[in-house]
Length: 123
Image 1 (spheres, one colour):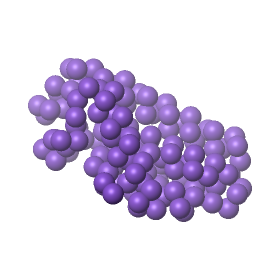
Image 2 (cartoon, helix red, strand yellow):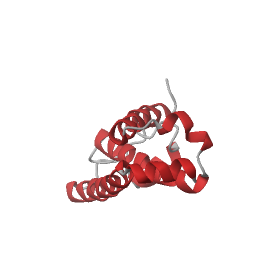
Image 3 (cartoon, one colour):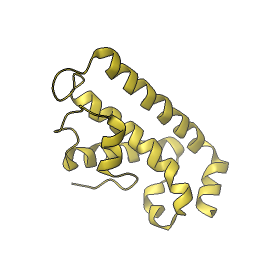
């Protein structure tokens, strides 16, 4: 199985919050989520950041990390919306997803700008 490049399991788990499914934050699951998300980001921005991620300046990598971990954390929450112990309320679940979605959409919006792509590659 492929391993995610843009973010780590710990970063995704922190964004999903407490009481998320322990199965969904297992490394194999998060790696699957992050590889899907990274592909989505690359396609949306029409540039493959995965191929040259290691050469990017650390300061500009974080926007990729943010967008990827936000989207992957949504997948973690969707795995078991009621939480690990079954006590995550629907309202709290929806609030978490909404906050993550809004942050992800902001990041994707910024990344779609070709001037940003040029800046990231030249930083």
